Image (cartoon, rainbow, N blue to C red):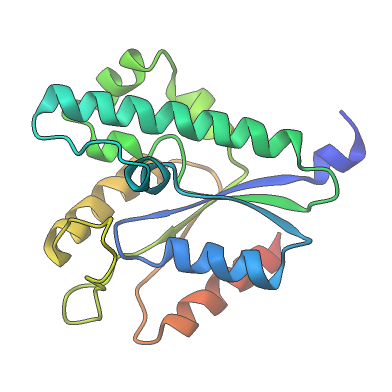
Length: 192
């Protein structure tokens, strides 16, 4: 492995709905376009393209399977185009789907023919952005987002449980000001 590739980091920006992941990746993409290669959220890409919403457990499994494999392909494509970049920033990671899966983590991994160790090792760093409550500014304006503020917080907790065993898991609590949240993410990125 070349020295350039050893220094290249793969970072997962995760958290519940409305936490600010996409806004942070948009800022990174605009302000640091020559340093960070951004992988957009696969679920949003699929839903914006007309992929159907799930209404029962079997449909939910189909949706999460599509999201997982789209994420894999998007990350592989980004790796092919990573020369000259310091890091890849992924808006969500491959294990996020386990929080939406209508079953256990073990069933999620088995169905997708993967394992926890492989998925954890895909990323050098996990930055978890906490979803805000309705009182703290949960944003209902995103047409892709269907969750209420309380559903978003529940999913946020499930996503924390999915990723918290990663050796480089960092938690960014909700802030009164979104700018403070962005600054904390930037401080974490500078530290690596």
